[in-house]
Length: 483
Image 1 (spheres, rainbow, N blue to C red):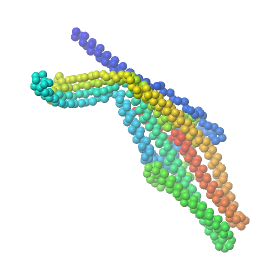
Image 2 (image 1 turned 60 degrees about the vertical axis):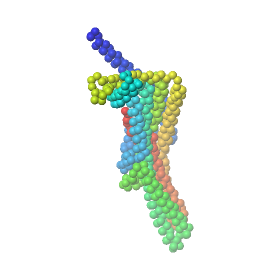
Image 3 (image 1 turned 90 degrees about the horizontal axis):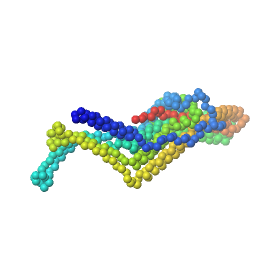
């Protein structure tokens, strides 16, 4: 008989290992529906027509241009880096990522048993009526245990489905952080360029005011000697006052743009980092949108919508698993003694193990919960498709402006040249007494407006380049952390 016992023990061990293998194999199964990415509800090709231009093959795509290579101006780089470090909105987005990561780890830990150590001690007095020898009795009991109080074996994938949903929600918050970073970089750059344009407009207004004040002084002297009419004097005075209004306005706008920039950065910006004008900012490179609209699927906001769709899909698996039994194990190994000093002596060992199965018979919430999870998925699909459509519209609009902005620049520059020549000729005609000063004032006003328009057009071109870089997903981290 002695040689049979080792075989029995070996068989028991093999059966035990087999059961453990079955448990973990079954625990890897889920009832999550197979995920298929919805078809993008947008054209595969970008729009074409008179408003769009062909992209040269030498133009890099966004994936090849980290933000430091797109914004090559060193001062602007420093300002953006400071904003990425100090901006409170971006910091809040990063904290949401940390919170989602912690929640995911909590949900993932549900797959593993929780091992607890416990100790207890009690003293009980039984009255004589309950004692075997009809005399009062005091009993001491001390325990020290190590075990699993409750471990649900995930046979039908309920916990694993919830773990998958938590993972996708965590990844969605990471994509939301990337979207916030892209938006922040774009806003900082646009505000910086707006400040540069406002300062350049202020310089233009100040130089125009100096010229107008000189003209006013000259005509005042001619008026005093009877060589100019009072109408000429009043007209030039009106022009001086109009330019003074522009000086005050652009002084205000430049100050407000600086305030907006410092709010985005999260701290004051040193004066040596601020632009003097648009000419002081390094030009931005062009970026290619790629040959197809598939590039949109890499945008963080689209990835975020897809992560939420996958999370909703995983929740269906959890809702399906709720129709099946839940099986849990409980086990404990320790020592028991009626004397604290002898708690760990030989012969005090004790153990207990058990299994619990809960079979759902009737639960009015089960079917509505499954239906709700399916509707949630349809909502997520719709939001995903809507996000793609919105992204396509944003890129198409940016491409339309990109395809026409150079023509606007050429036309605006030609207008400045023409009005500058007209103003010069009008001044000569007035100086020689051939024409009234009204024509010179009209020409000067037209020149001032066209110069302002040129600054505005140059700003629009730079802003369009920033916008195209943004809507194509430029400026975000390329890596997503996964656990």
